[in-house]
Length: 95
Image (cartoon, rainbow, N blue to C red; front, side, top):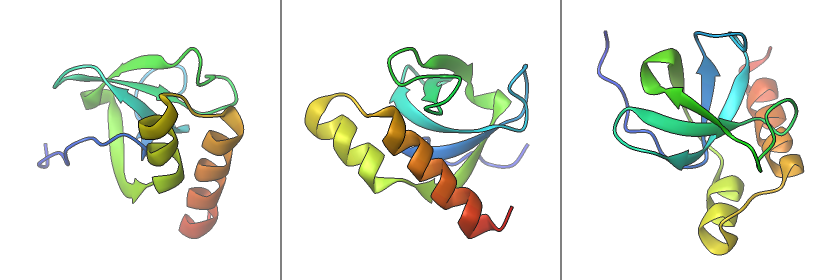
């Protein structure tokens, strides 16, 4: 397995395993060295993030500073901001 990037709050990920396989999400919290909490603003709201094993995620080089700043400043993020960050990432990638 390739050397994993260090996960960061606001980082975009692609889900590799589970029923959300292939979906994009944003890291909203770091649990420990193996787990993070992710949300996408649609099915997985910011108020109820999903705990995911890092081995089941593909970390993308893209980090949404808007999401990271919002979480740093207020401890929360809006679902709209999560959706916007994912939308921007998908457009940039050309999906």
